[in-house]
Figure (cartoon, rainbow, N blue to C red):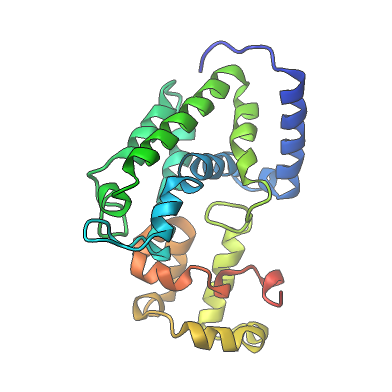
Length: 247
């Protein structure tokens, strides 16, 4: 990945702190946990926490499609998977491959009915600027740090955010909990969250028709459920890990 440079003492201290935080999140106990955390951190920094959020919060127009929560759920999980795959590559230009994927304006987003152009119209210039700046930043540190330290650096933006999202340590438990609740097997959840679930409404038929298929898709590739179905899951306590249902 390039010639390594001596690591600044302040950077090393920050890496040591980040490694400890990731350890406390259970990242190192999960299979490929550090790589998943790095994928999440990169997607947060490069994509999610940027101008796309302005598009997400804005009303649709005659040219820009509504970017609702389900579409963001599908897009974010798909990009996280792509980042995870890219981080497993030995290609020295792998981060620029990810940049190309993020900024592709013509490909229909998996699970959605539109492209970056459709959903990001009016924000495309700012999105491109953000993505390129952040990818260049990650590329700089990728060349400067040992491989594991780079993954820790990349995963650092994930610290302090949810450890129960797709690919993170608690995601499998969240999925299993959701499926049990959809089967009506978690009485405590329905006692505590029943009123809220009534307001949210019934799960889409495509979700409940084959719960084993839903479980597999949520666990491995949520975007395959489609943005409309994922919109029901977004901000839904049914996906919370068991220890948080009474919060």
